[in-house]
Image (cartoon, rainbow, N blue to C red; front, side, top):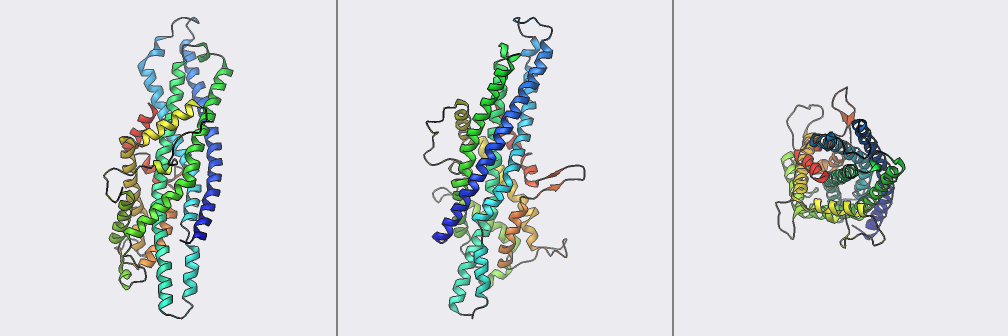
Length: 398
């Protein structure tokens, strides 16, 4: 990739990072204060009703200390956190798609390839075509694989952070139940919720602005390198590439993922750590940031990302995403659209590479499961039901 091309792409992603940073902060600040205030008032309202028959200053009602009540509140809060993590992801996806498409754009190479076809056939033209097709191949596969990885990173980190915040809000409410502010002093409660708003804004800013800036660029570069190595022998211009099968494509994508997951040239059973895409090498909050809750959520986020439960969820999400992509998208490249029930047929590698971009775009689409339900992203619907993801939410909430 030329230095001018790389500079152009970095300026694009910097611009996109600014856009997503602003959107993330606005969304997170609004949601944090709205959810926190709703949680606070809903639970305080219930507890007022339970406490109406008691004299102020006396012992709290027994129901207040009832473990079943605590369990019910916890389960309700976790369900709300699951919903809000999905809603937040939905707000991120359009910008994620735009950023990935900009970073893996091949319009320039495609245009040059068309221009070459109008020139006289010779050795120089053949070499240029070979080089252009190599770039298009690398970018097409990188776009597909980065889409899967970036989607999983966003989904899992949002799951962790939304549940962490939800758990801290519940802890705050239960911890203050014996004070007068639990049943009065609404202005004090409002101030406390505003502090959660600011803390969550800091968390969003530091996490997602970096991810959509340097982190996503690093993920794309790493994936392109993996594609270049794993599919080195996949030459679009070679006569042997005329018979590419669905099995070959499936194995090729798995080999790229394997190379991407390697550490020091060695394969690992555990998925790669995503911390390098979420924080700079020299991690540490600015000394000017004096927010204990934000520091706590960030530190706990990074600790959880390194935990076995997160890695289990990461592995399961990745497997589920690739399986669904195969079933819903890239396996259909080899099916005749006029005969959807026919068997897959080999295709030229050039055709496969060209259609992979369409596969990546379909990842961000929505559909209705039935006429009574709203349109949803099929991949999100699949991920939120994975047992290890639900376990990750539970662990993060505690």
